[in-house]
Image (cartoon, rainbow, N blue to C red):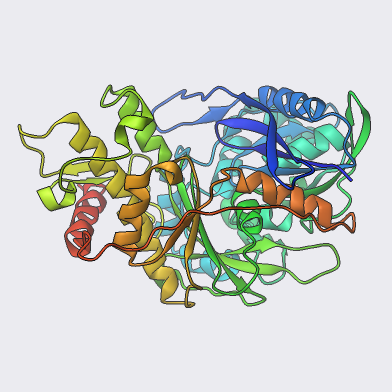
Length: 474
């Protein structure tokens, strides 16, 4: 049996399969354009994403089934009859709805949203973006008036367009602020609060099952899994038990901890209860989520500024840590996510002097991402004891300096995946599950322990974060 996974991420779409040795292989990869119409706005072209998914599906050849993972909170509108997109994809990083979010907060709506959806008021989630589309895109307004408007996260658009199934999986729906986390269905009160017409939303279904058939160059192929990318990575790591935790360092840094059959809702800690996955015919598995919005994106930004040229240049530094030289960077370039949830916060450098060189600025960025991730881990460990080591993947997990610093500031063993495509692996494994086939795969991990006397300046760094937070209110 041969199963493919299509990983539709923030910057690229990749097609993956597992070879006969049990190793995941990337068969095809295509980057897509990042569109920035205004300050704080981030969009993708939905037609470009569809083309890339089709190309990836064709590139893997003949397979028995396909699984697709998605960006999570990115969303759009399209027409029910023509399946043509009526809006751009508004990406999870986009903050165009920040004023509406503050309006809802001032109206006292946040407690009700936390109670029902388990999510704080933030432009990161899909609900306010979907409402913005309804109120601001003429084509969407017209489709609504004639009864052909469809709204949803990108997975629902992909499936409707490619297989004719207008559905979204429960893990993705749990990222919208429109799903009742206990009932696992669209919540009328939440839809009313945000101004999203419930009748335009897709059906919520389990993560695995019958998602229809996709036409490829090699004939019709069933789609048997649809899932959020971060939840796919959690599954790919083999995290199944309560307390199992992973961090994916991609565009942002996303921590997920399995909490099992229990919803753990700790809004005072800034953590997000979410659905990890729900297999067909089974109860849902829940998780705690904590996202740092800017991680690898901050490193790419530093490179674009000319602070370094090649990633190999920043794997080690023959100088003291930046924080021990009183230099700190808060990577709030797209706001502060978990556990602060301040969308207006911005990145700050503290302690700059004429003596600092570009390499120290980059060093401080790496450290800042590690410190912010440590804040999330600290909050999670207050809810559920974290099992053993922290598993990590993504581009920054290949940087030895960063991984060692992360071990030092968390005080935990860090296990970076030698195979970087854990998201794709999780998607393939979930697609296999519904076929009655358990995928045998081989995963290898590195090993980093905290160094004695490693950098500890956590309290100093928390003061830097507070300054970033305060900037939003000035």
